[in-house]
Length: 55
Image 1 (cartoon, rainbow, N blue to C red):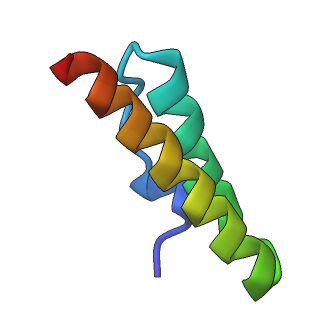
Image 2: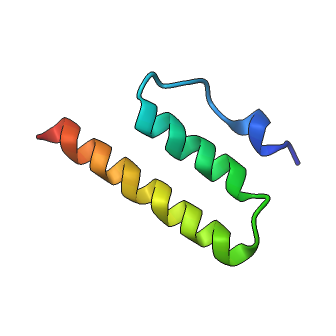
């Protein structure tokens, strides 16, 4: 299986989106409960960014 860093896309140019993607990639090294929190935080950030774009 490829490492999370290998699967990460290049930078998007949007700081919050890039940070969310890095957080998801880095979550694989965390205990399961902390992974869930990292995924939820990334999801929240991405929702907020999309909402702001749509406004």
